[in-house]
Length: 220
Image (cartoon, rainbow, N blue to C red; front, top):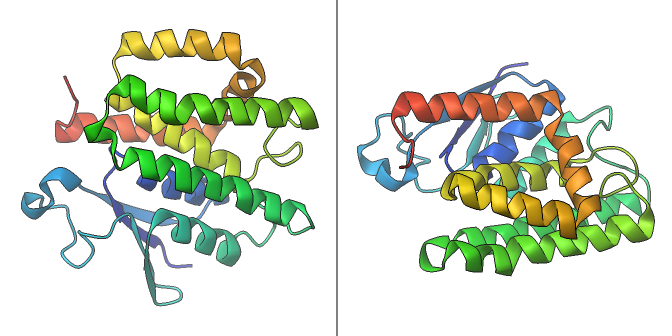
């Protein structure tokens, strides 16, 4: 298999979601990252894809694809032959799509507007509402994960988006919010902690931090 080529801005959550899925499936890939805010001057940015990222170039199928949701679904349907990260049974196959698109729709809509609203408004509008929804779901079903008792790509979408968003927040705010999370939504907090313990999740964000430091993109 030829390596997948993945392009995007490592600061945001969208690229992180794509890379996490690829890592979980053990697929070979080449990652080309750049700063989307200065894309016109960034030597790392691919000319043809710079305005539509993250983007995937799959030389195995001669396919170029953009939009993180479409990329994730393509990778799952094309390369998850052993059903490691997705269900094929009814109704689970639809429940995983429900949760994945809940993440894509809610998070992406707010994340795209975060420059125009305060950090606290962002969390009030998005994170708290989603955590309450997940808390209720896990409590009523008794599930360890969003669909049953094993990880699906839907779970991974949430962990990637939540962890990636931390860079926009102060350390004190992250600590304050984690205390609230643990107190108000304990089931969703435990779910999140289980996902954080996955090797691929730890590896992804360790590599991301290294790239950000090396490029001088650390925010004061």
